[in-house]
Length: 203
Image (cartoon, rainbow, N blue to C red; front, side, top):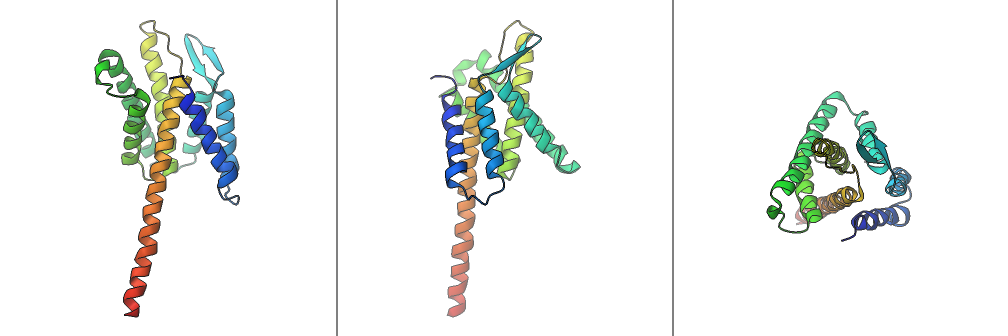
């Protein structure tokens, strides 16, 4: 499969939803749209830092997540850091297992990582925003750590490449889908629960 296919399809899908479908009164609509477009524009550009090759889009997403984290209160910031660190370790461990024992990759790697890290994000955080920030920061930190590890053995590894963006965008898609299911279940419970109570009062 061509690298970047998941990334471009998913991000363009998000952009279309934000631009043409989402309520135009939403304050976050234009910000998210701008972030998506900028990420797409930067996705094919990279720079050299010593022996490391870093994608501009990956660096942009990492710095953006840090900026949003910095606005949190100290307690939440500490918890977010711990969650992000857990994702980082899990991300590096997954890739190392892929090198040393590739037979355990039982189906397509992107989907396997998407499901595993999506589930991890759901376990660690409650809100969609917090889950997305944790995944973006944690996986990009994992890219940096994994690249540093491979660089010690003279194996070049581009940080934040299209292959990484494929995985990251797929995790974000799965988390967005899960969030929609959570909101739908809450709506039905509230709506139908209210109707049930109304019927009971009338009898």
